Length: 178
Image 1: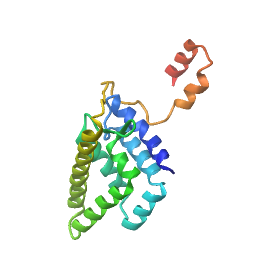
Image 2: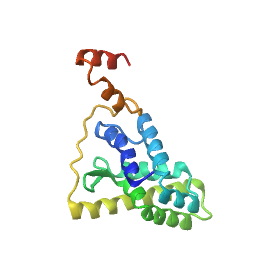
Image 3: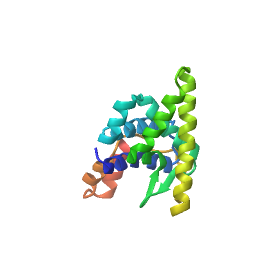
Image 4: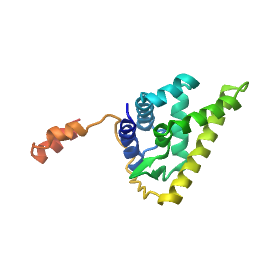
């Protein structure tokens, strides 16, 4: 997967957040899992995973804690809005540095303490990244519509393209029946 693929993988999660969802509600958790699975396929990210052995749950914790700590605006301006944790996968050396520091400082501690350390370091790094980007490019105007997030983590964009030539009344009735 390329860096473009990572960017595409974040879009559903960002849309869920824009609609008032969270990274820890049922749909949000599934979207975070999908994002991490897709981003982990990038060759640079995959090398870091093989080298440092983070669990999928730990990578998901990085994403969730970064987003949650920055709400209601978890984005930076990078030629358009981008979720802050996405940058860690687009520039995987940042992810590597985070994981190396957590591995080094969590030797001999409980798993709970390791998760606390990973959470706090992820939140600190997310705040630093956002601060630097906001200073350089200005903050993203991330508007949240309180509609409870996406109803499902499944993509329906292709379905809508297929239904485009169908009269709108039939399309609405079909979607309502799903």
